[in-house]
Length: 205
Image (cartoon, rainbow, N blue to C red; front, side):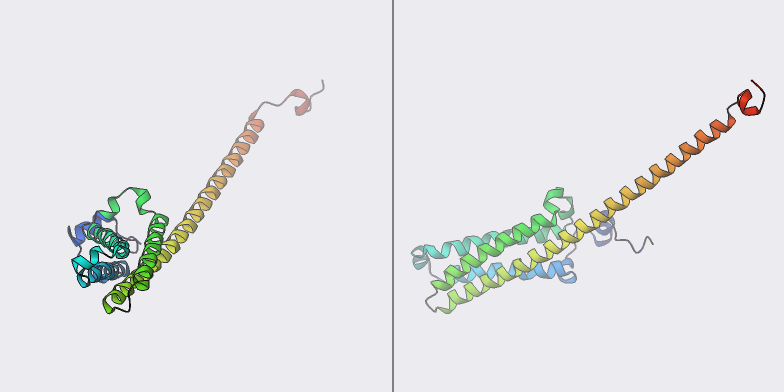
C-alpha cells in the first residue's frame, strides 16, 4: 500500500539528486515546457535576427512581439529551472494553485495571439516575419493547451476536496450519533440503578 502512494518531495529529491535533468524528457509537463521554450525563443529571435538594427528601429509595431516572446521565454525558463532543482514545490501555496496557472497561461495565449496577428498583418509577405508570426501562433496554442490542462487539474482537485469534506462530515455525524446513543444508554442504566420507591415496589402507601 505504501509503495502505491506517490513519493513525497524530500524522498524524490533524495532519490533524484539536487538536479533532475530527465524531468524535461520523461514527463508530459517537461516536454510541453520544452516546446514552449523553443517556440517562444524563435518567436522573438527570428524578428531580431531577420531585421537589421536600422530598419528595426523604424518598425515599432514589432516591439510588442519581441516583448511578449522575451517575457514568456524568461518565465518558461525559470519554471523549468525551478522544477529541475526541486524548488518549485517550495513556492507559496497560492502560486501552485492550478487556477492561477490557468489564468497566467490564458494571458500568455491572448498576448501571443495579438502580437502574432500584428506581425502577420505587417509581414509584407516576408518569409522571416511570417516565420516569426507562425512561431508566435504555435506558442499561443501551447499555452492554451496548458491552460486547459491546468483547468482540468483544478476541477479534479475541487471534486476530490468536496469528496473529502463530505466524508469528513459524514464521519463526524456518525461519531456524534454514536456518542448520543452511548449517552442514552448511560442514562437508561442510571435510571435502572436508581432505588425504586415503595409504590413501585408494590408496598401500600
